[in-house]
Image (cartoon, rainbow, N blue to C red; front, top):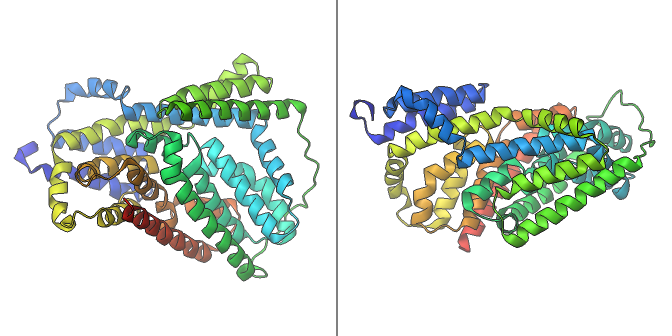
Length: 431
């Protein structure tokens, strides 16, 4: 350490990163500043930075960042071929939108499914909004209700999507297969959030009916007809994903298997949708480029975390926290870790998980916390931050729903946050 400082001072750049994450600060610039500060504090040679970044390209974080980019490319293929819109319209017609309850269910299912497939909350709901809003507006669904649905059902899609950034990261950190991850964390949290979302949506609908309403909405015309080409592409996508994911679950494959699944399903869907090879590749690359910032961030995040770990900062932090966990209780640890992730670590959910895993890894091993419990804690820590207080995701979904009712959305978010922490505590009691 610089000036023979205590290893605990290596956490200063991490604290700066967390503070800047909660502000309107470019995430890549944030990591650049902090990796430089951590390099200086830990006396890294300037000439070594090139080789350090080069090694980071082949790291676990580099792989996760690459998978996330590929997932964004697949999302672009689904949009280009019309599969995304076809899936939404099929779900809406299947459920039917002739009552408030059915309108709420149709919106929930559409948002959850498309977010899980595209791996992006804002991107998927941006596709859904112009389709769904005219439909539900005719039934009398209020913007306040749609905002809650977009938020809750949409983020639930992030919990269960086989290759959403959060899921891929947690699978990689815990070593769980997709099937095991779903049983341990994805399904329990998804069910909880969906139940709360449905109940709160109905309550908020009754409360806001007559107070808020959609204005200047063109009457929906039921004239959508999918071409045979789009239907074939959707079928090809569904079958290829089901087969590849099923095979992966059978093999107990890890996160790296996602590379094969995403690229193959994108190619199969693209060709089934009659995209020529050049167009298919161009569309895929263009879609992947939307997540380039996250890939770069992960490449820089790797040395940032490694510098702190090599200085012994995390071990020192754990030694300071040990008096608070004298009971060696998994319940207390789970409660503290979940709250730390929700309220104490900001930024992208994937980055949140990486910080959490490095920060608490010694305690996880010391307390013999199972990968399934740790997966749930990481999922809650990374995703429930969006519900805990108004931030980018909450404000973004409110905007897409054309709502101005922040009050009810915040109340809903607090209920989800409390319920999620209780779920973690309950699961830890059975460990």
